[in-house]
Length: 322
View 1 (cartoon, rainbow, N blue to C red):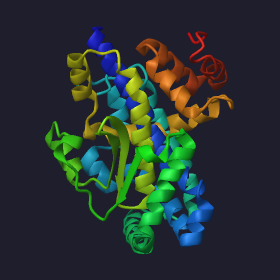
View 2 (view 1 turned 120 degrees about the vertical axis):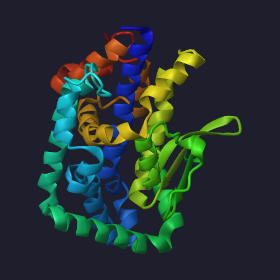
View 3 (view 1 turned 45 degrees about the horizontal axis):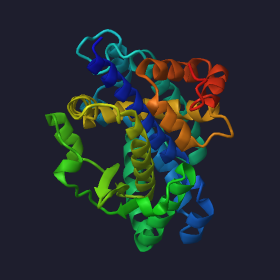
View 4 (view 1 turned 180 degrees about the horizontal axis):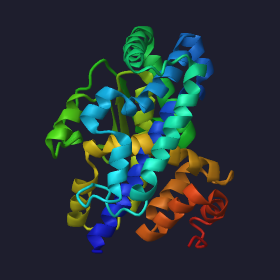
């Protein structure tokens, strides 16, 4: 495989971690600031619980399957269809479907507890109800909710809140250069966006920009943007031309749904294997700096042999990771 091909595979792996961190945060972040949310509006936490499940289970609903494709079929084709975007990727083609299904089952088990229906058409109606209810309940508290999203992100990643820029809005209005569209499907996804997270330059500094149509999406996008900032360490050694070609191939809106639906389970397993004395941001930075094949073997062990992976994670940055 060419050097470019190897770097493309590595970037796919890092994107999987980035999107996984965001999706996992969407499932859990509101509990980090539960007391503050309850003080603002006691009904929010329950709705965030439901929206978190909706945000994952939507990929197995009829409408999403029509637009995106049926997840089991997509992941089966990753191992056999040469034109598949993840064909030949040693991790996504092997584990993507397994992790997506594990995440779906975990979410389904929580639905009854959180009061979310799993009946297909009723699911769609409840989704619309939850979204509209959140918009109404959040509206009087938007400025405070933005600060809470920044606080939660700073707590998890250790990033100063001054480097976080957040915005809650009913509609996503983004500059074209923030999210380039490289296909008709990308353009469709861009038109339907309800959140954005990324790294932008403000003066001489790089800051994380997060936008969402509700608090949970905003927090999720701030997490994603911070993970993206950290993972820039994995691209710093590339030439400008190679960097552009890698990003043009990998950072596509059409790939995000697949990373999100499977990445949350991957991120949960990384957190479970994380040594207690290792800051999360530092671990992700060192993972991003690993050579592609070393990174792949590490992620495979996180999935298949978490105890062995924990020992390797403990050695990151100390010259003992192999």
